[in-house]
Length: 352
Image (cartoon, rainbow, N blue to C red; front, side):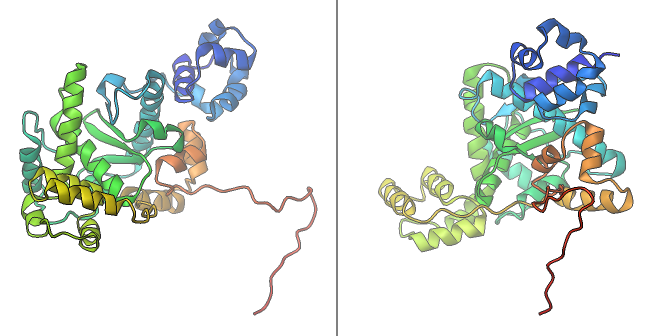
């Protein structure tokens, strides 16, 4: 029996390894990868950081890179794009497993191709009944409308946040960062999903789409009516930091958008930007997915499906599932109290 070649290829792409490099690490020729025997599964799993059963799953392929909205398409290498596309397939398969056991909302976001970013933000606020004030938790809001949001592993930080459509469902893979920066990233990707589903490969089109997604994110998080009553040339750093907390958007984004809207003069913008650079950086706060906070405890209790068992079914490692789910799929770590087989372990409890 031979292993599934498309799975070998996908795992290799996710690990950013060439065929020749993988074959050399296994001590075989490249042609043997296409018909790898069963007894190579352990070596392949070790080389590609996945579970041996991954190569026994049905044939598949990564998400087409042409359908992925990359945050920095020109600065993202082909290898990085291919690795992200392979990760995208892993995320889709994780959600397939989840939806076999739970009924989640289908993606319900309007098709706004041809809208300006300002009109798209206003239309979305109307359709989602968001009013004209600060938005609530954006991750929960997206999940409530069926957008599947996963976290990006540190190994793909260079790719930054990306998104795509697959089988009518919207997916966002979110890079690490401060909570407000991640809100801005999610709003940016939402802009792509709303406005750019028919985007072509033309570089000029992609550059325009990035600018439009940036403007959409600013318009969505910083509605004009709410911003106008709070920002003027008399703005000071303490007030700016209050606005950052109120709107849940980075202070730098507030300044840039306020200047673009004519609420701040160039001199005030430059002065506040310089002063803001002297402020201590905000610490990272872990986002919490409502989907994962409900799904994984329920799978554990009702189905006896631990993260390790879920990972085995998907052919991934428990650590990879942990990385994809904002750390909400718990993994068991090896302890430091190693002992010989049969050796008793002495406790260290004390009465207080």
